[in-house]
Length: 87
Image (tube, rainbow, N blue to C red; front, side, top):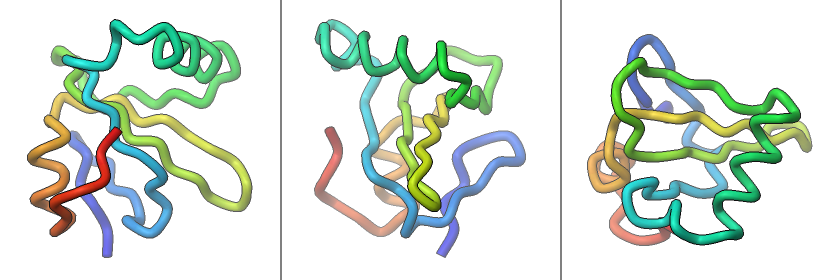
């Protein structure tokens, strides 16, 4: 199953490692550091020009990518049919 993250981007739901609520977790030093490192290494894909609400971390063939989306983690979870497991 694929999960639509916004714009024309969808990811395989089996590749999702984490969904991070950016509205609440960006105050964490570890979250900031993780996102900064991902950005510097070119692993961040911004799928919207709007205010970001979530970061979806995906892993494929041992490589991770972080998708920044304007869609909230609650909405993404509903789309994926999940009710637990966000970071």
